[in-house]
Length: 164
Ligand code: FES
Ligand code: FES
Image 1 (cartoon, rainbow, N blue to C red):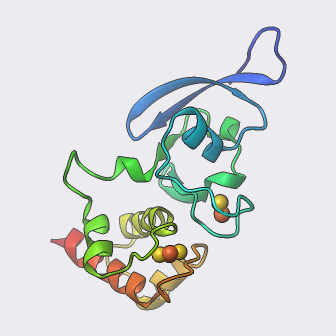
Image 2: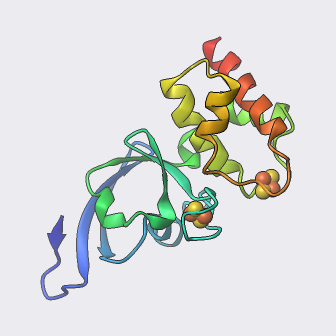
C-alpha cells in the first residue's frame, strides 16, 4: 500500500476481485462496499444499514464472510475478494444461487446476495452443516421478508447440490 505522492488522503491498493486484478487509487476512509459499488460498479453487493448490522453487504475476503460496509478498502490491499458477481460461471448459476431460487428463499431479494455469500463461506468449510450450524453462519444476515425457514431450506439444498 503506497501513499500517492502529494495527496496524503489517497492510497494505491491492489485487489483481486472475482479473480480479476485491480490497481486502484482510493481514499483512506473509503469502505470496501463503496469501492465495489461506486468505483467498480459491482452493485450486486447491497448497502443497507452501513453500520455492520444487516449483512446485505457481505463479501468474502480470503474466504471469510465480512461486512464490507465496515471494512476499510485499504485493509483489503493484497487480498482476494469474492462478491456475488463472482459465483456464476458465465450464464450458469452457482448451485447456491439455484438453491435459493428453487427453495423459494428470495422475496424482495435485498438480503439475498449477502445470504448467499455467507452460505458460500459456510459450505466451503463445512459441506454438510447442521441446522444449528446454518443458523449460526447466517446470524449476521437479516431478512425482513422470508421468515428464514426457506433460507435454511435453501442452504440445505445447496449443500446437497454441491456434494453432487
Ligand atoms: S450494509 Fe453492511 S451490514 Fe448492513
Ligand atoms: S428477501 Fe427481502 S429482505 Fe430478505
